[in-house]
Length: 283
Image: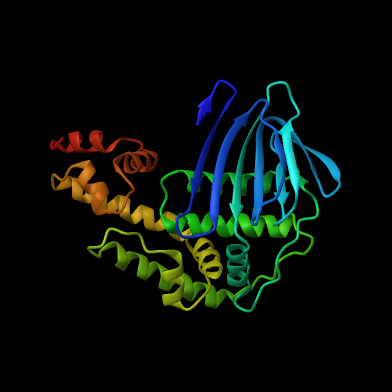
């Protein structure tokens, strides 16, 4: 929704308590309210001020806002040009799932954020990446990885108590990474175009999603989702050499649409799928 006084874009997961919003406000005033989620926001431009837990706070460009479930707060512009911000709302059950997975089992303690405004570029980056994959075309594996990274970053750097993390031995990590590599390569050859979800991959190997991510990244320098996307791009390129169109190749390899496929093909190879096909004499 866009008006002369600002705009709002909103996204919601259909199966998980997960929402994302991007907005620019000039004179909009939020009344005192609360959410039943953890709410993490990034102020992109301008500044916004609000009252929370009996005190006044201001979040300027680059700062992060952290609200616990049921934290009552209001909000309004603190600068003449208003403020632009991104925010994600994550249900407590989803936060607990991420922290329990990272701990390797057992009920994880829920984080408590004592400061409503945090000035930490690492948190800003983690939340920005999560917001980007929630509001744009991305497969579930990428979203799972970004969600885990954002929740753990917030809990480790912004909460009053750091989360418990399970760390495997070097040999165990090596075996997990090697097993994941084989499964990802096998899945890329399956007729199904859907990418292999992180939870399915971790369950097959017998480890947590967090352990899988750490082991694979340490061994191969890429997240499992990035390696899987690389395999899908290679397969799509091979398909196009047989005369298949970019649209058909995108569908056959599980990309959200042709535009999504084209963006990643160009980013990876430095040329568009159309240019690639023309060089083969089939475009």
